[in-house]
Amino acid sequence: GAVVSQHPSRVICKSGTSVKIECRSLDFQATTMFWYRQFPKQSLMLMATSNEGSKATYEQGVEKDKFLINHASLTLSTLTVTSAHPEDSSFYICSARPGTSGAYEQYFGPGTRLTVT
Amino acid sequence: SQQGEEDPQALSIQEGENATMNCSYKTSINNLQWYRQNSGRGLVHLILIRSNEREKHSGRLRVTLDTSKKSSSLLITASRAADTASYFCATPSGYALNFGKGTSLLVTP
Image 1: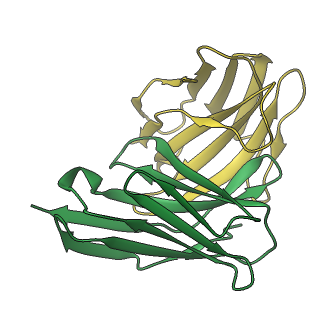
Image 2: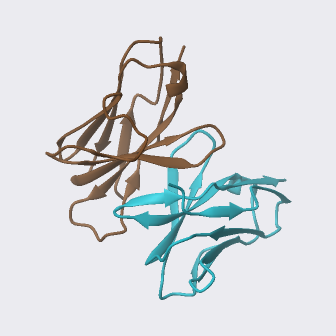
Image 3: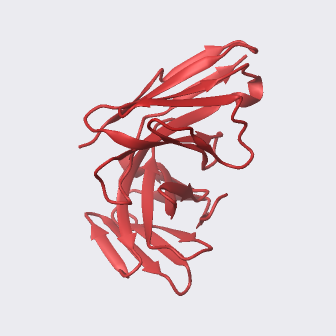
């Protein structure tokens, strides 16, 4: 089946630093990738939609200058949390939609646990 | 914005019992999906039910969809300790998904 990986699986960083999270589709090409955020014991909230070769579309309330998304190839999207603060600590999950899939098909990565100290 | 609301928020049962989780949503949909998430892990897709379907089965899972009531249910039969996880319903938002708040299921041996 289709596999999506995320790297790193967990990261601890200091306030003010930037952290990059990678999302890769391993055995398919993903024209669209999505970034979600999940706080402890809560649901997933869509942050942004990333289309290969174009600018990401951010959900209302998500700061595009703080959460930089780059979808440079059909198998890789990156999320950079800039000038991280403790309130950015969260579980970040990406998903990828195959370019040749039906409208409903997408695959989720295992998530990245970010802790900002 | 969140579309789905699951209930109960938490459910504790013993192995062998059935677990039923409900999901309500607000707008018209053309499909609804259920996912499982083990603690601190990613999501596992369980089942998709289309708007023209009323019921769907997959192994020990049974999903129903009532579009008139804008609700869905997930039934896990003969539960096992390994079914302990959070369960989310999700409805389409463009090509992305809107997730409900989830039901935390604990199955004790």
